[in-house]
Image 1 (cartoon, rainbow, N blue to C red):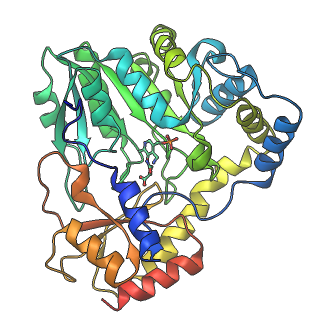
Image 2 (cartoon, rainbow, N blue to C red):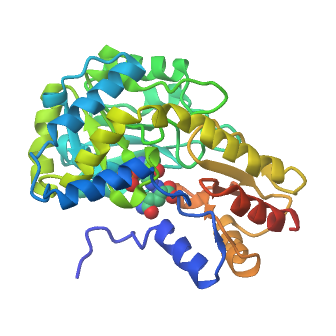
Length: 379
Ligand code: PMP
Ligand code: GLN
């Protein structure tokens, strides 16, 4: 059998969570909250299931959820979105990313992505017959060299995928990054896929610079988000894509044949949540900033170097002073010998990266974070 993705194995998230369970380790590897979804969300899901909202929704989503998403984009970013035509509800951001990529990438097209890159971009590009052009960013600051991006653009370039706040680095794009991106996009015929799943998790008072804030940039973009991150409900796999009408039409052609529609009761429950407890979204940054600070303060006495986290629920640690092992070996050792599971960063690079950096997820109780930090401080 000739595999369509010969170089691909099991995702690092599945691998590390399996190891964490096997060794009964504290699992700071795969990114998911240890705390539960809000009561209202759970109650309303239950309500709509029992009320009989159990059949297909319209393919592009339950209209009242589309409306709530558009209103959130207006409130947060001043974006004027047509809920009916431009918002499509999907089964997680993963589906939205896959569909957006299939919608625009043709055989032979190139897509610029930044390593360390979230692991679902590359296979989706390859399955569309495209090729990724990977631009590597490195510790400690993971800054994008936009000159290098401009040089990588050629007649085959079809799209650039950005991700802010960025998984795994925790870095956020600044206004000069958005300006540079905009200059490149307007000078060439290409599109932006903007992965903004951590849009409501930014720290130290920094705003999230959504592509939705800029009409000209949005005109060439698919903006993708996930309710999993926002409402501590990663297992629900609910997300969405906002795109200008002409791009949304193409997106929907494919979405209808990938999933057709997403889980109807969850769509109603999410609409209620956004309508009745919109403040949850506004409190998320502060909530996670406190978690970041608990973990980084507790690690201050350790031999790890803590890299800055400006958003997401991830913190990077440089372990150069702790071990000579490469990052994959170090994470293996850490889970087996120290009972802490982390993610090695090199797996998110196409070209080998020799940075000695691991990722910890701090979407955990303070108790779990302190327990993990106590172990790490002894290394
Ligand atoms: N993009 C990034 C950067 C992510 O971290 C995640 C979640 N791990 C996703 C996309 C996928 O989101 P979802 O679980 O809603 O499919
Ligand atoms: N996005 C999560 C992470 O970065 C994992 C998602 C998954 O397991 N596919 O850890």
